[in-house]
Image (cartoon, rainbow, N blue to C red; front, side):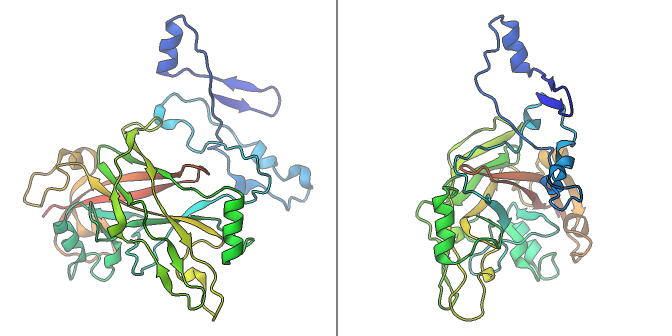
Length: 352
């Protein structure tokens, strides 16, 4: 349901889902015991503290923003739910940032804002080959189901310079305000992705040395394991939620000596909390070689026999090969703070 107008009389638009209508038809009543609030349609960048008419007008544009009408689709409900925190000292909330630092850590880089996942080694070799689309940027290739190739990495933290990134302040603020996430949920389209690989228990922290700013420790793809805790998504059609996804603690701080910066390893301006690393296994049949049978999913949901430029962009070298691909998204959510991000993924198979 939705509030359609808050400028005068409040209008409440309530629409029953299929399940709600069934229960109402049973003559037993709905007996609503829980509800959630969301603000998906609100852009808080509209808050204008420099409004010439004074503080009473700072949030005027936000209050006048049209609100979504009620919807019944299971995958069109609240994406960004509101949270309640008793601690009034929380001034900033954690957010995700993709970490593409090309270090010994094997973090993958995006290309045209997409992560490219090769379904088999044949496709990986073609993408990395001389004259191939990523011949000079091999860090843009992720091989599905691999514990040695590149992985998707996201850093979680407070992206502000208002709180120091030194070792004492960073840890104190995150831990004392109880905004350190220890587990995550990863949602994937089960039509295409059948396994989520995440860091195993006991993976080393992502840390630098404070004197020389060397990378003191870091998790690698060899620290990753398949996640076996999953269930059908309650909010996204055809999606599967992988639960209790593990991460590594981030101990990247501003070094005490020299002129180097913590930004050498971290993509978060303020205190960092956790590092999440991900890889995936694709559905059976989608990983067939170019001489094998093309899975119907490429025809039904993606594109087939695409040129190199059609698959990887106009700047890619034309290697004369063709590819099948499917675009999908992966949702990463922090279980404690509710921070979330949608990760765009292109699943690629060499076709010829």
